[in-house]
Figure 1 (cartoon, rainbow, N blue to C red):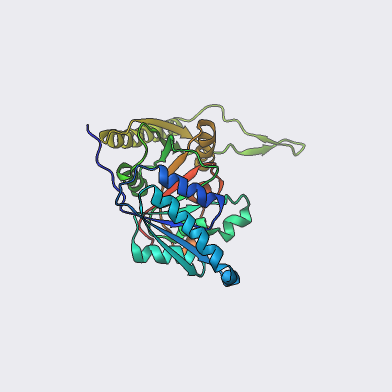
Figure 2 (tube, rainbow, N blue to C red):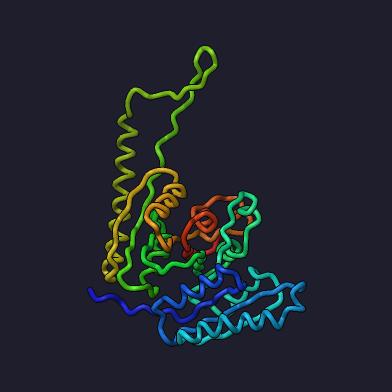
Length: 297
């Protein structure tokens, strides 16, 4: 089947002058985007930087020049205020196809609770968000995550329509639930030991086989949709803690870009409830594209 013509009409790039933002610019320039694609470069600054406006304008102009050399239509905005709030507000008003931000790769639990700019944009924006990490490497291997939900389907549809380099190595991964934990028992001297059941029950065996069958069906459906668009795809089925399995696979297989869906939880829920997408944004070694699902009521 002949691949569909893929387009992307508008990108909102958050520029803070960091190495991660430079990596984001390099990634955008490497994408086979159409000539009419418009890139809006947004730079936010705080009141304490008011005396540096000349330097900020010069840096912003440099970013725009790099994108213009690539042939894009480029606009720029230098705004006073909170970066995350400005990015999400601007996106709501301008409705870009994609928001691109650099990530500083927080590594602490405290960082997750407080949230950096990239994490806040992923949490609250209503548009797909591409979080780019440096050092930059051209996209050669893409990992699409799926659990069979509408949110995963939305991520797949976005990947089908988004222009990516030719001859990509695309993998589709589904992670089965981990086996049930073995209970601890205590010896007569109080030493804890793992209880080993004599055999797997028929109920457990049937449930495992059912989960594996569903997982294979989810992968086959996703692979079929992508290959109908000319995207050569490999299915990957894992079992265990989803975030751990995914991040180990990313590291071992040198994945450049991971694509996943997100439920789009409300503000209170989103910070208290864990999610694979949030862990990937913080801990993954590669860039992450989070495609938002409908906002929670």
